[in-house]
Length: 478
Ligand code: G6P
Image (cartoon, rainbow, N blue to C red; front, top):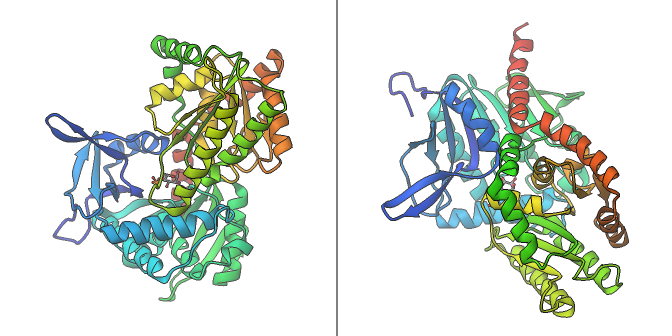
């Protein structure tokens, strides 16, 4: 990437994220790469192709250095992590300190200085990698909580760059953020960006309160007036940009004959219950899977539901399996599923079809089409794209979405059956409301939700963010 003559790189648009947007696949003739599922890469790949773009990120294996390479019109720069960095930076500081802290301390965050040191070291490496790739005056867009120090590091080394940051997860209230021993470093790290994007307006205002309290900068509405250690002054802004999905991909799949057939087959294989309920989550304690199972189990116990009439498909995709809290959660969820199924299953029907796998998007859409009721019961979630995918897939405007108020998606999907997952009676009522919703009412709600999702896809999200990022420049120039 680096151009030896002037010290600048070759790329005008750089995305930096913990993971590269590709997965390794092993075939007969060796290994190759495949684009990862997910909206972010869909939104950014066209921008990359047009703007001479490069993506900087970890390729997912420890102790392995790879050369930069090209993959479907994107230039990729793999950042290496040692086995100990995977443990301290990724599993430790990112996913056992920041993740639980930012999700309302559902699990207790751990604070270890060795983890913090590694976080700093790795953030430095990502910042250096991005700086090597970036042409003079390039735009660099840094993604998510794993890389919150990168904006400031980059700005120090490369004041010519336009720097954006987007936080995909919640930003916690000041009273919770205050626990973090390195709270000021994180705030200053983020303030290196010209524009800091959040999912919900409340995330942006939580952040701005923390800026005032822990960094002492002047905050005017969404603008922070920063003077850094070198005495240089600039304005950094914090605003909300709710992320979305690749609507076209989902709706196209939802119209495909083979996928519609598959959705019917799924129902049949479940023993053709009247109602199919569906949960799709990474196996993460933020998702409220235990609360959902508790409510569902009680409905069976109360006789409000029975396994001939209703069946729950719970997809729990494996995630962060070496982190203690995730292991504990798996034990708990699988114990609960076993107890419920042991009590209520018959030879022909099951209460919960539990699947600890991840699936390709085609199978996901078949599941969305098979499900009369989608359950999203997150205790805290930055956005929750599964909710939006379900809505996008329901091209016949049928089906009902039960949605936690604690997911960012609740800001957009107002016609869902909104509920508080901590209120188990409320969850039970919401599930019954969704199952028994009159067809016309369900159609009215789904139509309104689909309008919202179809008009605000992920491409629009990235355009909004990137144009807001460029606007700052115009204001400064005037
Ligand atoms: C969340 C985070 C992402 C992360 C993803 C999967 O959506 O916001 O940054 O990549 O979970 O988690 P993993 O730890 O496997 O990357």
